[in-house]
Image 1 (tube, rainbow, N blue to C red):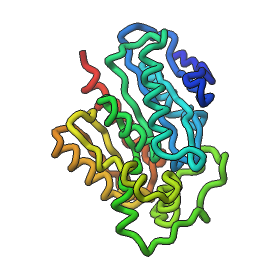
Image 2 (cartoon, rainbow, N blue to C red):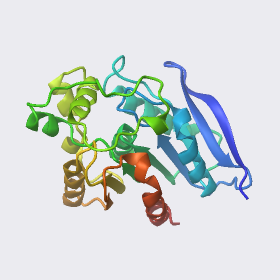
Image 3 (spheres, rainbow, N blue to C red):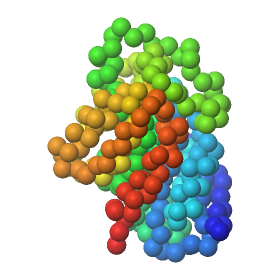
Image 4 (cartoon, rainbow, N blue to C red):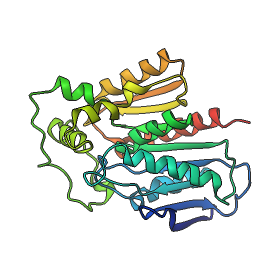
Length: 266
């Protein structure tokens, strides 16, 4: 029986008033344990750390200390603000007094959280897992000029995360929140597209997507090819159906934990 404690609203960025929740099993506190950053999704404009309670708890029960941050959201803050916040969190974690192995930090995220997990891996080289990560940005926008961006089907701001997962394709909304992330600036969109920045210094990645969902599968397929060409290890799991992120998370959990086991072995 685990004893999961949640330390809420810890300040990690005073400048922007950003806070992080920390999940850990107080019966398993030691200097050798692993840490995960659990990054919420929501198209870079929705969501918050409170929506990650279930997923973060599952990782804490598996022996991790889990850091679940808020980060700056669009449209008030555009790319690269969210990834700058997460890099700041990563640096803050390494300098903190929490007990864990500083060489065993990973990240997980769904949807835009998956995108940001990949971004963090590109910058730090840590292993990550991305479920339905938003990967194909500038290439997809250029290839779909006929799609009219619209947030008509978007969730209402403040909707609980478990109720904002999209099922099936929704190109109009996809185009809207991708462009919202850069305020329709196509030059900035090219910079934001992580597929343009894969290098050999990226960390290993576990990538999952369902076959026909709001996030195009061609993005994850291209990501794995780019990683392979750069000599970076990856695991790809494609799930049958239309589910997005949280809908199929139970089908990926065992594989994710095994993936991190491989990359955190002493």
